[in-house]
Each structure stands twice: as C-alpha cells, then as structure tokens.
Length: 575
Ligand code: ADP
Image 1 (spheres, rainbow, N blue to C red):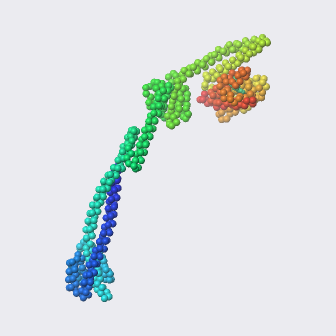
Image 2: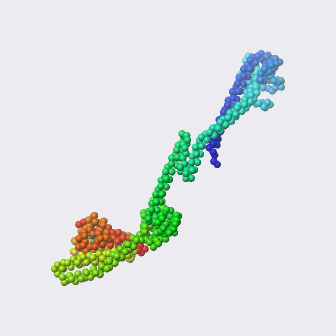
Image 3: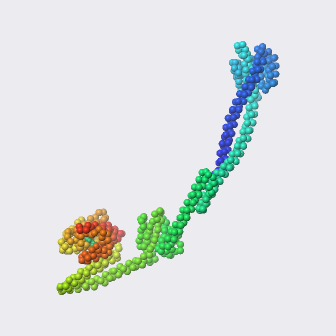
C-alpha cells in the first residue's frame, strides 16, 4: 500500500512526542513520589520532636489519663494520628482510637526500629482504609533504655491526587505538542513533497514523450540538485532525440536518393527500411514488415542472405528476367543486414557481346591465318635472298597472331565452363604430357629438365591443370637460356602444390604484381621475338581460380623464377 509522505512524517513526530511524554511521566512521578514521602516524614519528625519533649514526663510517670488527653488535644490540631506505645508494644494512648481496643504494636517495623534507639520509619498499606500510610516512630529515651515510642502516622493519598493532576497537565501538554507536530508535519511534508511531486509529474510526461518538460529549481538543497539533474537529463535526451531525428531524416534522404534497390532486413528477414527502387522491384506499394522472400523470389538471394560471414558478401541474382549484383552487409551493432541490388543486366549483355565478338573474330581469323601461314611456308621453300627474309618476318608475325587467337579461344572456353569437370587425375600423367610437348625445344636449347615428386592423384579438372602447366613450362623454356627447368609436385592433405622453377632471366620485382594481367609483358621486344602473347599467365591464373586454387611467383632477376600453384581436391559438389 502506498503511504503518503505526510503520514510518514506525522507518524514519526507522534511517536517521538509520545515516547518523550511517557518517559517524562514515569521519571517525574517516581521523583515526585519519593521526595513527597521524604518531605512528609521530615514534617512528622518536626511535629513529633516538641511533642515528645512535652509528654516524656507523662510516659515516665505512666500517667495514662493525662497522656491520652494531651495526645488527643495535639491530634486535633494536626492531620497526623498520634500513638504512644510502651516497650512491650502495648498502646498507652492514641489520638483517634481507644488504646485498650488496639493490638500489640511491638512488631511494627517502625516501632522495632525506634526501640533500638533510632527514628523508625515505615510505609504500609492499610487494607481497611485502602490507602498507603507513612509511619514515623520516635523513641522516649529513659536513664539507660527506651521507655516508650511516640508514633505519628499520616495517609499518603495526597501524592496520588498530585500525580493525577500532573498526568492531566502532561496529557494536555502532549496533546498540544501533537497538534504542533501535525502542523509541522503538514508544513514539512508540503515543503518536501511538493517539489518531489512536481518531479514525479515531470518524469511521467518525459516518459510519455514530452521531451520539452523542465522543472523550475526551487530551494537550495538536495532537491534542487535532483531537479537540476532531471533538467539536465531531459535536455540531453531532447538533444539526442533531435540529433537522432536529423540522422534518421538524413539516412532516409540518402536511402531514397540511391538509384539502386536498397533495403534493411531485421534478424527474422523482415524489411524495416527500404527505398522506392526496392518497392518498384518488388512490385508492391508498402513493404514494411514483410519477409524478403515474399517480395523477391530468388534462390541465389536466399543463399547470399543465409551466409553467416561477418564481411560483405555479394553475388549475381536473377529477378524478373534481369540480372542484379546483390550485396549483403551486416550492421555492426546488431543482426540487421543491408541489401543492395544493382542492375547489371546491360553490363552482362555487353560482356556477353564482347566475349562473343572475341570468339567470333578469333574463329574468323583462324582460317585466313592458317592460309597465310601455309602460303608463306610454301613461298619460303622457293624464295631466296631478301624475299626469304621478308617471308620469315611474315611467318613469325603470323605464328604470333595464331598464338594470340588460340590463347583468346582458350580464355573464352574457360569463361564458358566456370564449372570444372572434376575427375581423379594422376599428376605424373599430366606433367608427363606437358613436358613431352616441350622435350624437343628443351633439348634444342641445351637445357636440363627435371621432374620431382608426384606419385599421387588429385581430384580436379585435368584440362584446366594442363593449361596451367603448359603456360608455365612454355614461359620457363622461353625465358631460360641456360641451366635447368624443374617441375615439382607434392600433396599435403587435400592440397596439391605444383612448382615450375627455371634458372632464366627472372622478373624484376616491380613487374611481378602485374604479369598475370591480360596482355601484360615485361619486355615487349623480347616477348615478340619469343612469340609471346601476354595471355599465358592470365590463362594460368584464370584456371587456378576456377579450380579454387591460387598462383604466385617468386623471382630474382638474373637467377631464375619459380611459379607455385596450389590446388585443392574438389568434391563433385564443388564442381
Ligand atoms: P608471354 O606470352 O609474353 O610469355 P605471359 O602472360 O605468359 O606472356 O607472361 C607475361 C610476362 O611475364 C612475360 O612477358 C614475361 O616478361 C614474364 N614472364 C613470365 N614467365 C616468366 C619466366 N619464367 N621467366 C621470366 N619472365 C617471365
């Protein structure tokens, strides 16, 4: 249950006031009672001492008649009762009753004390009169012993009356204090709770979205600190919200101004942000909260979105008869993914045209080139002198053109078969076939050929590996004038490494990065004279990439070159 602040403060005040009042009452009543008794006893003593002097001769003489008379006379002038008792406890005279009717008083405590020569004092409750009595006993001293006792007694009910009146006063004072407490509690609770209530109200409005709410700082205390902290918090919230809104607007403008289809997916694959191009592509008016697979029916896109890679992944997807480059990136702060679809239909068409053109031109060139070569060779047999020199130049250039056309056809054939045709291939057979092709040329140049390693099979596309080896061995032969060519093959786990090392001219460091580019040659005149096309290494790298492998070069100009190819064993499903 909620207790208002006022009640808590008031309850505290009341508790303290009541406790203080009760403590005061208990303590003061005990002090008052004790001092009242002491004062009364003293008064009785002061009254008794002259009386004792007056009646001592009567006691000594045992003049009971005179004694009783004197006692009664004295008793009427005071509120105390006077009794005279002899050493045996017999009552000799009494100011209020007939002594012959009274009990023996020898064993009353005050009488016993007085008998021993001291002033006796005792308080007892009278069952008959239902009140406490104070007894004071003074001894009559004889020659050697006590000859009697003068006892004075008085009821103590005065003190009860006094206590009652005290209690009444105290109750009145407590009530007054309580009333003041109530007023103070009301005032303090108002002073304390008003700004807290104001803060609570402001917090509620802030929570419900009113970021402009502020609380005026009231007093100079902790509540003022709290108020200032609240205002500060509200201010920074408002500022952050403004910045956030500005960023959001900025982002929305950017997203909608992008001509490519762009959308953001949450962890469940629902669209949360998207632009008009995405809506047009999906053919819907609103895509908020819809699953991407309802809007874009593409298996390839699904595969890209299922990728768990933390990096951006991209691939081609077909949508509505068009080709798109789909890029999927993860938002670093969460599970959201940003998807862009870039229309590359025209690009793909152009690329296809270019490839077809290259293939068609190459095919068209093949026949005339073969004819030129044939005629030039025929003429060469019959020509002599300067004509023979000219014919040799024609033949060299024709051969180079034929090589270029052949390389271009190999490259386009590779493009046509991006899926390797995987089969178990013995590396020794492959290497043997290739080195056999170059055995004559190697011998003619006086080079040594070495074959190391081997003795294993790999799962790959033999046509593509053969293309790699042909180009590497061809280069090694072309660019080595003396020394040796070594072909090495080894396998670790599922990875095959093939190395072709020569002791030729080497490749300067600055060219090593670019030699795999199409038509890139280090030394144009040398390449031309050796019949190079600048396409060999790009064929080799293309083939290695299709096979899921890599190719790298290590070379020192003047001392030789090593090309290293790594190829993984392919599973039929990789194919
Ligand atoms: P090319 O048909 O001209 O040999 P490649 O693409 O096969 O074209 O090679 C590109 C260039 O790399 C060559 O022109 C040559 O300068 C350099 N090159 C390739 N292999 C070697 C090698 N084994 N030794 C020295 N240079 C080489």
